[in-house]
Length: 329
View 1 (spheres, one colour):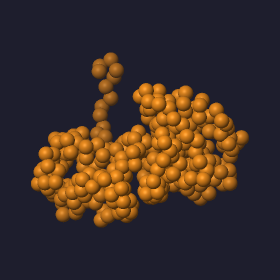
View 2: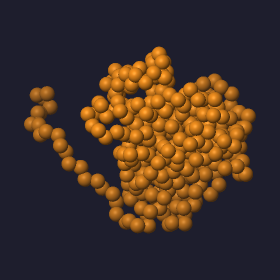
View 3: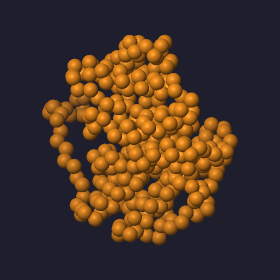
View 4: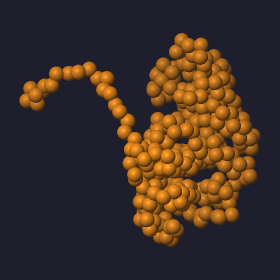
């Protein structure tokens, strides 16, 4: 299956949207119109569909951003065609930047970030969404679109944006970020819903599965160090390291627990993307580009290993209330 030459013009450029995840989901659904048999769930055909989606998502994301940046933000519209001789990470950087240039360190860092984000088990929201829609017998395009719209939720795919925004807030409100005491006091304010977004969360800290350390964060951290040296972002890196060291104690004190949380992969990924010059609108889409391979694996596994629809049971824990007739309300 090949996309026609007018696909980008008609589907992406003419229907631009600030939410690039919506653009990606709509574009994936549109791909079904160019598939001779989109509902074929045989393994070879589904594998072919998944490979096509994985290969095309970077184009949907970057072109979708350029369309939004041009039509909504009045910026120049510069579209580079993907180069089949470049890797996915190299193509993303090339297509995103007006001059199409990037360094080897930048490409290596983004490539590893994509690899690290590829998969994280079937219990996360978007992977479970993939399983549920697949179990209903739906087609690949609907399944991946559903996973994309699950990931776009800020509680799932938007944590790295929150981390960089939190760091900006700290720099704006802490007089001396190198003072551990002052930094600790402000983190306590964030945790007590007195600062930043007043949600009581220190973003990038803790994980539902990893309690001692997040191996993805440790791996990504190596490339963050490389990029910080190349970009001259040592002061910014120092702030991230200080918060990573101090925040677990602040959280443990708040919870009155000896157990300390660890930084997760979202803690460093936004910082890395910012050093790469990637706009915040593309942070979650980059997550989706990487995670598409994991979703594809979950879809195929669900198709070949199960034949039942997933129907989770729910038990209401709400208190029973007496019914009040409409005319008495």
